[in-house]
Image 1 (tube, rainbow, N blue to C red):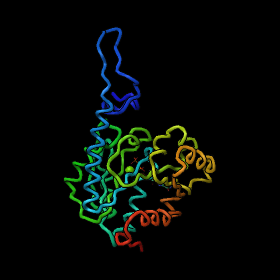
Image 2 (cartoon, rainbow, N blue to C red; image 1 turned 60 degrees about the vertical axis):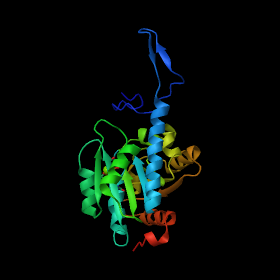
Image 3 (cartoon, protein in one colour; image 1 turned 135 degrees about the vertical axis):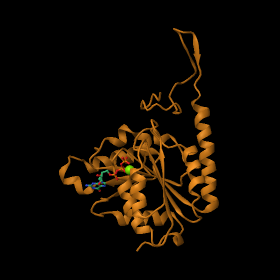
Image 4 (cartoon, helix red, strand yellow; image 1 turned 90 degrees about the vertical axis):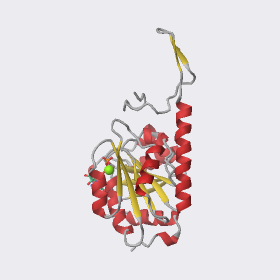
Length: 248
Ligand SMILES: Nc1nc2c(ncn2[C@@H]2O[C@H](COP(=O)(O)OP(=O)(O)OP(=O)(O)O)[C@@H](O)[C@H]2O)c(=O)[nH]1
Ligand SMILES: [Mg+2]
């Protein structure tokens, strides 16, 4: 059982300083976390090589459940689809709902169901890549399982990690879940259309986010109204060879 989030997974890094003995049973407990994370990191490096070889730009989308990952992807595919090949790998515990939404929006989508698992790992992505066989010079979005804890610890081989936060989640989240904010390149602060209705302290959120990651870029946006979406598209363009993107 994962001690981090109680998800039933066995392969999280835990913070035991050393191996230790259970004094009641006299059994020696060996901490295997380092080896397990090394294994993930090796597979992540292999994924990265795959992306480099095919000139695929890969973005790992992470957030708490319901922040708007799939909605943002639906709107993004709508903009990209004319000039670009876009693929999406969807990660959820159960259902094909998000994958179906992505297909409806016009992009090939591969659904991974993690069951009791709370994150995607590099091996799952490697298997999905073999199935999808994405074309060279395409863009691959990975929508991670909605969870602000465990996905932060698993490198998938992505080029960039994008964290979606929303104004309904509170300004304290960067301080309470710092690893997620530390490991992200960009934060999309979504649902700005709801700002008048919630007591979200925007300036405090930005200060908190920058206090854990002073390099973090933040774009305020609403996937519903479209506010700020152009800045998100510009960010994607700025990260990738110009020839890959032709935003209308
Ligand atoms: N008002 C408002 N609602 C939004 C916005 N973006 C998404 N939503 C709504 O928020 C809910 C969750 O959106 P999803 O896109 O499914 O969120 P998700 O992050 O993909 O959720 P999981 O995959 O379950 O983690 C849906 O009802 C969306 O319509 C936004 O900018 N404004
Ligand atoms: Mg989703």
